[in-house]
Length: 78
Length: 264
Image (cartoon, rainbow over all chains, first blue to last red; front, top):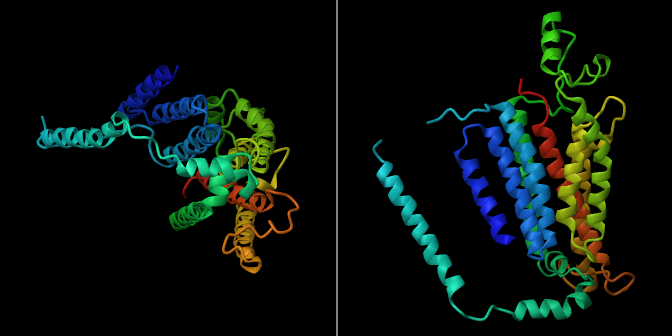
């Protein structure tokens, strides 16, 4: 179970870095945080799991989406 | 291939090798894990701090200085964000505000075509681009999430949770309330001045409580309620609630600043 979660986190992380659509990257980042929260819970750290779920999946995604609203959605750099 | 790519690859490989050189011995060597601090907290945490959740006992009791440092970092980041936003001319607004009065009929029709899954027209003249689904779900869930955050915050000494955890959940609830339906039910919690006052008052309580130990001989950030023995986790409760309110109001403020109006 832990190996599966870690593999999913790794795949989503590679997708987050490589994608050109920043909104998709943010959604993948939130998914990483949710999976990490599940991982922390399985490793008997519920305090960290609560923090990771609330900060990573909720608050930081809101702030990143706010940044996208002020800038651009596409990554135009080569 | 561009010039410099080979150097980039070289530095990437080198940094991974350095990381491996640091991390591999940690997993390979068979030294016993340092257990003195862990055993001490496990044996004395409930008696000294009054907390059955030993994680909270560490970061709200034994290591309260670290926690206060993090709180100061958070407050500094909130101040910096507000300074940047005010210098950029943005308005700390209460959600998306699209002024439909100054628009032509064709622009209004474009907005309505863009947002087919929205509220009826008479209910959405302040936030025309928001969908019905988002409004209803966040508006209903917001108060529940805030209540859950207060539960996590207040019961942090006996169940998983504590000041930071409850605070970030309260901040999520504030974001929900800010995104939710404000046409029918308006709440004070999404207004920046109210959040500022909550944050300042909570930090004042934290600072005053930190000096309380000086008068009872337990020192700075000492547990001055221990002598009275009314409630074993009394001092920790003050720390927890004030830290939770600081974190919740501060992060909620940041998010409301980000979902606010466009920079003009």
